[in-house]
Image 1 (spheres, rainbow, N blue to C red):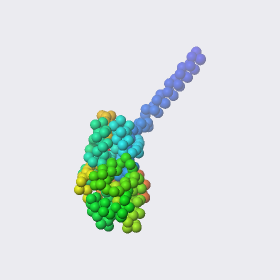
Image 2 (tube, helix red, strand yellow):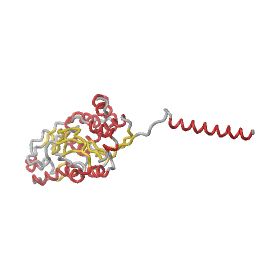
Image 3 (cartoon, rainbow, N blue to C red):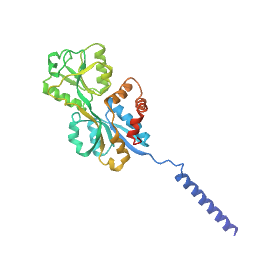
Image 4 (cartoon, rainbow, N blue to C red):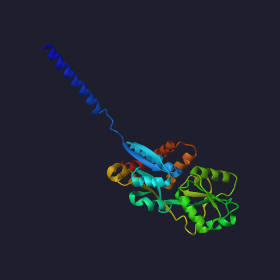
Length: 291
């Protein structure tokens, strides 16, 4: 009898322990696993600024955010395959036209987050005495016969190759990086030298230096375009909350330029993004669906 009582007590103790463990796992103190989302981006200044802002916005919404840095072509390919969830810096209809033609049927065009404010082309310091791409061959020696570019896969590089052909320019397009292009521009301006770079707006350089786009009468670079949010197909069904945030995300060229300028001035990327978010709380709340 004593042995049976001990066995019952032991069994009761085990059951109590299991109940306590179960309560600890499912009680109010438990934390739900975070939702996952990935942001694809190219390491351009505008994309770095936009991605860091949206990273913090999604973290505020309870997501574990994974930024994925890739080149432009692989970014569109990754979106079409569903390997990343979204990007905030597609430039359409001109800059990324080639990639959109190739992959767009398998990508969700969410919305224009900066409508009609973007532009690409050849950019020179304002003190350069020509105003059109058509005039470049007459002063090729002043530019050293070169146009300073960025990453080889960028849309503005493809458009510049097209411009060289259409205008018959006797220039070499020198591939570099966004940072390399900015460094060459900075050095040339500090020495009051002529320089032509592949440029785009919005970008911090227009707030830092006195610059101008060269006129493009042949339209090699296209006209004004949108900066758009693109997502993998299926995101709207898989995660309506995330898709809702993306569909409400819209700001201005001045907004993104302010974040870029702070980063270029030495502020850490996350800190620059937080500064903008703190100063624009109402808009961020609207993106999050709180307003």
